Amino acid sequence: MSILVVGSVAYDTVQTPVGNRGDALGGSATYFSVSASKFEPVSIVAVVGTDFRQEHFEMLTSHGVDISGIESVKGSTFRWSGVYGADANTRETLDTQLNVFAQFTPQLGVNHRQHSYLFLANIEPSIQLDVLHQMQRRPKLVALDTMNFWIEGEREQLGEVLKEVDVVLMDENETRSFAGKQNLTEAAGYIREIGPHTVIVKRGEHGVLLFRQGSVFTAPAVPLRSVVDPTGAGDCFAGGFMGYLASTGDLSDDGFRRAVVLGSVMGSFAVESFSLDRVQSVSEEEVEERFRLITELTRFKPLLDRETLPFSDTEHQVH
Amino acid sequence: MSILVVGSVAYDTVQTPVGNRGDALGGSATYFSVSASKFEPVSIVAVVGTDFRQEHFEMLTSHGVDISGIESVKGSTFRWSGVYGADANTRETLDTQLNVFAQFTPQLGVNHRQHSYLFLANIEPSIQLDVLHQMQRRPKLVALDTMNFWIEGEREQLGEVLKEVDVVLMDENETRSFAGKQNLTEAAGYIREIGPHTVIVKRGEHGVLLFRQGSVFTAPAVPLRSVVDPTGAGDCFAGGFMGYLASTGDLSDDGFRRAVVLGSVMGSFAVESFSLDRVQSVSEEEVEERFRLITELTRFKPLLDRETLPFSDTEHQVH
Image 1 (cartoon, rainbow over the protein chains, first blue to last red):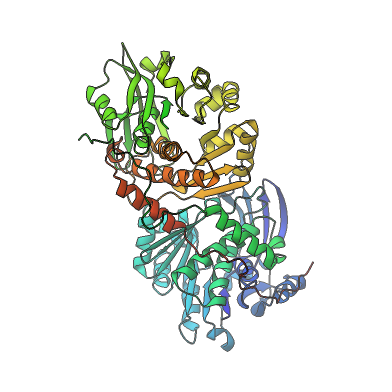
Image 2 (cartoon, one colour):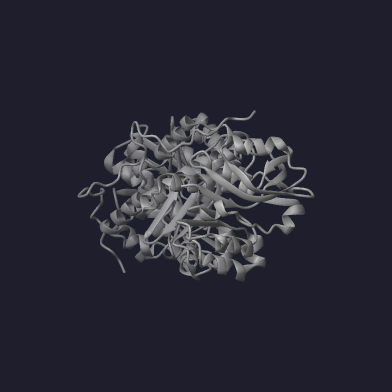
């Protein structure tokens, strides 16, 4: 069932240890929609300026993305500029120009209000909540991404929208910061008590943790020899994750686990190039090859039902 | 087949966010031997001062540890003091008093030279190499741990001993620092070219990476609600790892993968208390329960042989 995403469409200027790129197509909704569109049709609700290039509309359309919800208004498209250090997990924002994004007040069309899967990409929490309330009926699954900027500045509003979503995605620092708890298991428990039944903690090159009722799952990141640009990895993760769930409709624990693995696969492609260069061209064979790679990465012989480990009985405990 | 470990026996004074403990039994060889002794007999070669307490000899003996290679010399036992921040992955050393450890020149007895499994715990590389050369025949498996102090100060000597060992254990910063490569896959490849067929990268709460010929394996850390003291986690990991291999003799890739999981299990117990309090009392049932927990943590439905993922064919790539 098709997916609706609300978020940013942007032009990014990025420096990484590998190189740099100016005015590359970016934005949370852009990354998400191209990634998710590999698995299920996506409709995007966003705003761009009159400088948004026709080729980028065409690229989205070529992936089957419904762009009828992208409003084009007078002014410049959102621009972000940042630099990554040697450690891809840390980045510094050099400049943020909200431009037309500053007045973004999404009005969902009739066709967009009926989607069964909703991804609230990283935007102001009050907008996320407003979009959710515009839906004609409660979607089957609502997932939300956010960032430290909102956690620090719009904590109350963020808490309100969290009450109404199913899945939260945060990186590990955001999870700790929002929950005020250093321990991720405790922090995820804190967030789940607010409302979401599922908390996904993104740890960059250290992979992903999935916390659900009575279940914790860990997926590794694909070990890559070359990381070109980490921008958008989290949104491409979310795209693979939501794409799998919407395509299969499998909201069981097994479904969520596979969705996380597919998310990791899509995140791994995202970082291999600037912008969406690599993700755009990913084939079914490449996705499946990397899915199998994660299977191989995590494979070990479990203990059989009555199997025991070697254990010495020389211990005579001293207390 | 029994295991020989050469390393430090120490008294640690530790501050963590949870509390503090003075003159707690520690040292790399101590942590390793108690952990490994759960699975296979261990002989320890180390030095202590005349202040080393009888109850600590007895504790080791009660775990079947052969302490005949612990030399007791006039002076004080090695003392280390450190403080951990909120992030358990970082610590600051407040004080190091080598004491009798400064003159540690291990002389292996006849019975110790015949062990088939040798763990060279974190000590000066030239001592590690000397011990290896004292062995009557090349052990079946030699593993080595080290630290930034030797990587920075004794790089050449460390390189020499690396040529002759099978398995290297380093944390992720040490791996990067030694290899001069930020990318862990590349860094592990660099180290493997020096000699070791296996490189284990310890990432604390982010788990472990195992790099072998044509094989990469990732094991998560057990998500714990309470981390009391991270000291010794790496050595307890090594103890579970070597203990499994020595006990089963299974040096296949499957064997190494299980050994890494068992190492993660033992590391998880280590951090749940100060000193060896928790590791000492661990039962077979607890070890197996946590082994099964890691199985559950990493479980997802792999793609079957001819199974495909859902994939949209709406893409018409734009270049």
